[in-house]
Amino acid sequence: MNFIKNNLANAFTLANLISGSVGVIHLLNGDYKTTATCIVLSLVLDFFDGFVARAMKSDSNLGAQLDSLADMVSFGLLPGLAMYKMLEPFGNSLLGMNLPFEIKYLGLFITIFSCLRLAIFNLDEEQKYYFKGLNTPSNTILIFGLYFVDQYSGFFGGITSNPILLVLLTIISSWLLVSPIKMIAMKFKSMKLQDNYPKLALLVGAILILALFQLAGIPLVIVYYILVSLIFQESFGK
Image (cartoon, rainbow, N blue to C red):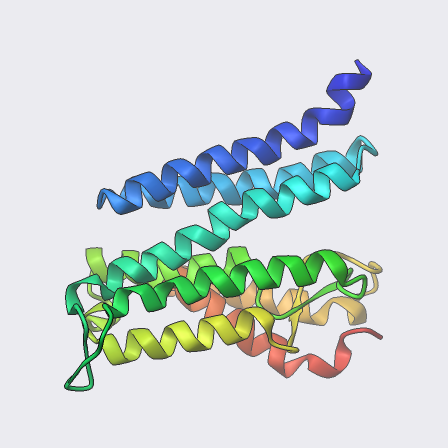
């Protein structure tokens, strides 16, 4: 029984890794619906591994390392490859210039900065009740969400057909991952209403955005999340 108790959370983490790996395979094969399903499953498993570890008091250094390693695939490699796929049709052409490399490889900067973000998080004891920089799951939802929505509805006006916008998005996404901007984390320091205004604003706004825009609202929620976090910067750490 102790073995199960000590390793149940790790089982959720490894399931997250498997889901992310399957998502990567289907992304490269052009099966974006299955990739989307895998991302959702990884998000659920990523939540529950921490929840189970806390509930069963089985937190461990091994679990923390496994969590980051699994997230590196599900929320690090996958969004980098999503941007790789978006940039793939443009070859080595950008701003009318022929570069000595194919610009699709620029998408992997998202993977590099995701790795940096996860390593920094592991070493930073400050990020208990808020994140510093955009967390990797949110970044994955933003990058893949834009791609997925644009592929199936064209709601964002064909953003994936503009290589300049995609390169700018890659730069912004990479910077946000390691930026000093404090971001809302859904961890409650207290149950006082005034201590949770940022979370309430995020929750209410996210529900409204999803109700209004439905599928297209998924990446918009992440943009809203960043904006709300910027508005409430002064309230973090108090």
